[in-house]
Image (cartoon, rainbow, N blue to C red; front, side, top):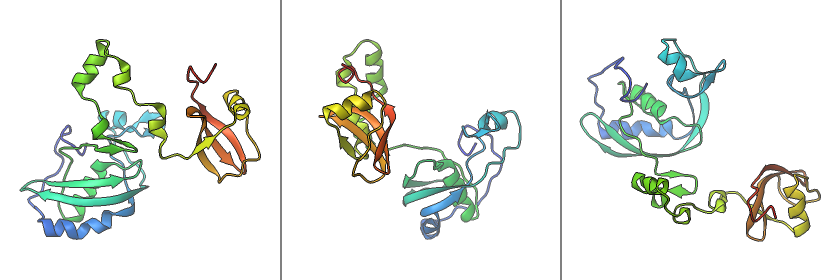
Amino acid sequence: TLDLEGKVIADSCVRPNSDAIAQILPRFTGPIEQIPPAYSALMIDGERAYDRARAGEAVELKPRGVTIHSLDLSKVDNDSATFTASVSKGTYIRSLARDIAHALGTVGHVTYLRRTRAGPFGLGRAISLDMLNEIGKGAPLERILLPLEAGLDDIPALDLSPGQAGAVRQGRVLSGLALTDGLYWARAGQTPVALVQVDGGTASVVRGFNLPDVAE
């Protein structure tokens, strides 16, 4: 499983020092190919890979490209090393740990994983399990929920006229737009209306938001 949940399938007495680890990290930085773990949610012929693995099947997954934006060694203890990484979507940290260990002539697995940021969301704006319990007891959601646009800050905004906003709400395309091709979040004033894909000056709705104050 490449983590503490699985059974031990190999061991090694090799314990690389910090210098040895630091020297091989450039090999795992930038665009790389990695094989996802057998115990993953990827689909194989309509079934999850982890279901096949748990049934005792030999699961073979193809390598795929990911990007490791940064990879830093934080500390080394007798039996473990701690890293801080910034990675692209689709990266498996368990695979990264496995491959780093193999490159160092040993074997390894993940013992602790903490996601410190996902897109625009960091731990500073996360809520605790205690707070989640309070929500279940009827705490005001206004204290908890971020506005929709908080999740859109890495996507450029497209300002709509009232007529354009009405068309987008109905799922109609907009044409004659002098915009670079790509994904935009369309808004009427400061109210999000939809995600739209611009292609050749034409914007098509990818997902409408249908907020109560938008649908009036």
